[in-house]
Each structure stands twice: as structure tokens, then as C-alpha cells.
Image (cartoon, protein in one colour):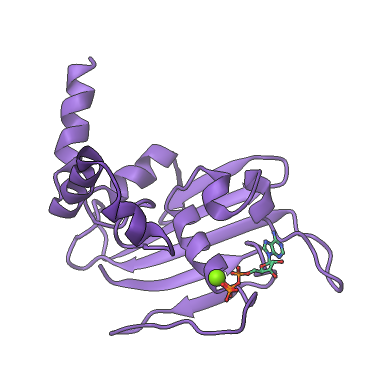
Length: 180
Ligand code: ATP
Ligand code: MG
């Protein structure tokens, strides 16, 4: 899945709009402790629909908005955009380039956009379903997750294999049909 850009604006330590370009091959992000490396992976999870503040090391979702520093005032808005090359139609969207944006205001209002059009969180989740890159997926493995997978119950591990095999979308459709 060619992820081409991640644009972070007002999210955690990223007070200034910052664009990270992912070229072919492996991209490594290096930097001293506290420089924002983990914040980048959290920005990724967040834009893909993460709804648990704790996963993003906060108590409240508003904790992800730049909280100010010695020299800068806090911001009122966080916005993260992910851009994919979708020429191979790996995402469930009929366009060569797909951008996904999430925005949060201090008032608590939150917005999701696909290719700059307002959508529901559900649409974001559906877009990523079976692409192998949902916010909980195997594509993002944080510290401690490897042990957690090894120690998980068989049915939890089965869910991981189902996601990797790309059958979740059918399962979700089946469950929706059964509940009607
Ligand atoms: P390490 O190498 O120790 O893992 P790291 O590069 O992963 O470090 P992060 O954990 O991503 O660093 O960044 C932590 C920094 O982000 C801290 O300095 C913290 O104050 C800052 N930070 C977190 N949330 C916010 C926020 N809402 N506003 C401003 N700064 C924030
Ligand atoms: Mg870190």
C-alpha cells in the first residue's frame, strides 16, 4: 500500500505544519528522545480513526492538540492528512490518489474528510478495511505489541489472521445483514 505523504498540523508536538514524504523502500525516522517520533505513529493511528485517547497516551482526545510551549501559545485545532497512491485500487475508493483527513477542534468538534469531502468515521473505517492498514492492524506495531500477540488467546489471534487474509470486509457485511 503506497503511503506517499503524512501531513501533521497542530498534532501534539507538531505546532507547525509538517510533511513527511515516504519514498520507495524503507523510511526510518530518527531523532533524540522526546523529539516526536512516537507522535508521528500516533498521528497515523489517529487519522485512521483511533478513538481511544489512551492509545495515544492521553486522558482526553483534546490532549492531542498542540498544548503550547515556553515560546508558543496552544493551538485550537489539530489536523492530520494521509495521502495514498491508489493506482492499484488497494483502497476501496475509485481514485488514483486518496487523501484522508481528520480534524479536531478544542470545542470537541471533529471532522473526517476523504479527498477533501466530509465523510463519517464509518467511511474511513470502510476505506481501510481489508487493506491491512486499519488503526489496530498489523501494519503498525508498537513496542510491547509483539509480546501481546504471542500471549493472546487463540480467538484474538484468529482475528489478526482474518485481517491479514482480507476477509474482515465480508464478515462485517455478513454481521450487518444478520442484524437487519
Ligand atoms: P523517545 O525516543 O523517548 O521514544 P519520541 O521521539 O518518541 O521519544 P515522542 O514521545 O513522540 O518522542 O514526543 C514526546 C514529546 O511530545 C514530549 O516533549 C511532549 O511534551 C510532546 N507532546 C505530547 N503531546 C503534546 C501536546 N499536546 N502539545 C505539545 N507537545 C506535546
Ligand atoms: Mg517514542
